[in-house]
Each structure stands twice: as structure tokens, then as C-alpha cells.
Image (tube, rainbow, N blue to C red; front, side, top):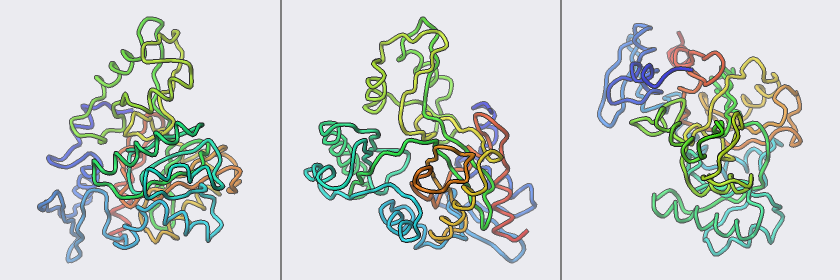
Length: 338
């Protein structure tokens, strides 16, 4: 684990930690770095140069990148290749929420905007019609407020370890398991205070930019606590672990654990296959998996959620547990054929 101060020392002014890691790696390799407007930049090796913006990489096809951000599209394509993905329907209006349970979907369910990231507007492990109605409304409200698409996905909930496979070309270079946000009780303080203390320690000046991010207190937090018969005012026992969300996104307080050497090679192989299907040369592939040491890649063990055309790399460099991987260097080696 690395401290927030150490991460700030890595940051290149005006750029995020993930982007700064790419820039610093370029400098270490003797490549030329040139900042550009709109937080873009150019990296050059001799007469060869490429534009970058964030962690959107020049080797990825623009159309493939746009399509990969549409979860519904990707799942349709994956199913044609017999790769397990959640059974999903798409809603155009909030009033259509009953359509989700009138068809073949079965509780528990997940509701999420088609193109949103960081679990924004999402609700997980929905177990009743009333929860579903409110979750669909919440997703549409989020999209309207943030101009983030027009359709909502409702899918069957799959319980498993949340894995992010980082694929470069024909190789998985890093795998992290993301654990949902949690606090550990001390027998004295309420859950609200434990969350506040955690957030004060790890609050970032730029959202979603540290391998540890603040834990939000919102509807999903309340739902997760309610399912455990707790509230924000509950005082957990000393040493008691209280999980605060179902989603494991680092942007909502999740913690990344490096499991690159533990994950079965068959799981890495299917992550590479998914990247190739999505036509992305560099991507993060998100897979839920019940047993990460098993070679089973059937629907009994895995469920593929999405690919990411602009994946964060900081969690692979600086996992909360385990040894980090210098994937920014690997990315430049691949792009510039070093």
C-alpha cells in the first residue's frame, strides 16, 4: 500500500495519477513528452509519435472503444461467442420497470445506466419489486442530471469475486481483485464515524484518482447496511468487519488486491479472448468469479461484465495488498515496440 502523499509526489501537474504514471514511464525510457491542450499529450520515439489522453491509448480502434463502453452491445457480442454474461434487458423509460420481472429475469437483480462508469446510478442485489422500481428511477434520474445516456440495464445479479484483468496485446499483465468498501469496528464508534475517519485519511483532491477513494454515504450504503440489520448509527463490535456496498469499484471505497499469480491461467485466457472480441489491444476486462483458482470458465463460475477502453492503471501499480506491476512501462513497450 502507498500513501496519498507518495501518490501526490508521482503526479505530473494537471494530470491524474494514472496519466502521470504513463508520462513518468516515458521519461524514464528517454521518450519525448509534450503536453497539449485539453489535458492531452504526445509521446514520441524518434520519428514515431502518438497522441494520448488519460488512459485512452492510440492503439485502440476509435469505434471499438466507443462500442466497448456500451455494456448491452458487448454482452450481445459475447453471447454469440458463448462467453458467460449476465442475462440483461434494456429499459427506455422508468415507467417500464415492471418489464424486468414480467419476462425471464429473476431476483436478485442489478440496475445500471448503459454507459455509466464508477457504479454511478447503479443499484445491486435488488430483491423486491419495490426496490426495483426505486432503483430504475434512481438510474434514470442520474442519467438525466448528468447527461449520461438514455437507457438503463436490468440484469441478474451474480455473486462472485470482482476481478479486473489488464490485457496488453496477447497477455494479461496484471489481475486485481476488488473488495467492496468496508470498515472495521472498534466497539466504540458508530459506522458513520468509522466511514468519516476513513474518508478523512484518504480523501483525494481529484475524484477517483487514488488506489483508495472515499466511501460514499448514499442509498446503496443504506441498503447494504439494512440487509445486515444495521444503520449508520450502529456500533460494530471490536474487530467486526462491516461491508458497506455490493459493488467493489475502487471509486466507491473498494480495495484492490493483487491476485495475478493466483488466478487460474484459463481465466486469463478468456480475458484475452474477450479483449480480442472487443477489438481492444489494451483494455481492462471485468469478470465476476466464484473460484479464481478454478479452470472453470462456464456460467457456473464466471460472469463477464464489461471491457474498459480507458482503464485506470494506478490500482495495478499500487494495490492495497500485494505487489504492484509496472504496467505503464509495459504499455509504452507495446505501443512503441520497444
